[in-house]
Image (cartoon, rainbow, N blue to C red):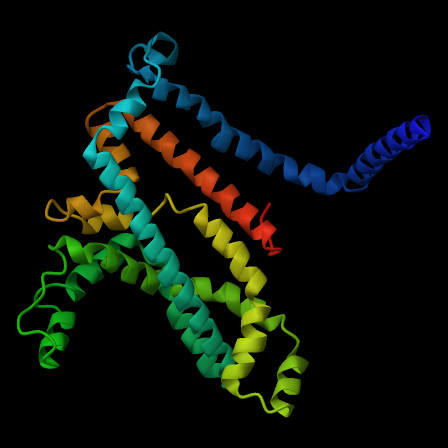
Length: 318
């Protein structure tokens, strides 16, 4: 019996290999088309990882990678002994979570509202107006935000006219407002673009489900709760997994442009830390170690989120 089982197993393995190569042969045109992109990814995404070795060196540009002194984990020990690096990790995670929560909720709510609108022209107009900011330069967006949230800007004027505050708030110079300003600006800029994905997912929902629910007496909110939201659940999970993988990337431009010495304890992210120590102070080993730490944590978060989704029998990315 054991010989028969072993023979069957070997035969199945051989058959699977033959099936793989035969399928690869049938799809050779697609394989050939993917080769340039594969080469691009290998050259520009994977080959630069050779530079990670400088995280374990006292890297000197004149000596190069091969000539620089190997220092082991000294750069990492130096990083985790500094309060400014730990603050940058905290700021990165805090702003990423705020962006993720506000951005996801706003995109889903806007998509549901647009899905319920029957007037096509109005629906397309709102879509166009909301996703156009995605194409604006972050320099322009931050310039607009600085004018809007200035002490004499429209936000302070509105709050004072409504008697909510007695004197203008210093939004741009107080640390406690910075994370939320970044979240609000990111939502305004990206909500329309993110909504497109959820609207596309809603269009795949069978319209007969809404008709049947309406016949059974389900109101609009119940149709949204029991049909629309479950219909976009798989899309939401996939996007959530992808976004969790980017939790260590809170951004660079908006924090760099909007930040100042008054709010540096809340504005400095890991990317800004890497810029400061890698370019300004020329401590390349330390900067590489910080970037390496960010990448490793992002990979761990991605696989953790994917594993949790798999155990909950949800859609997974991997």
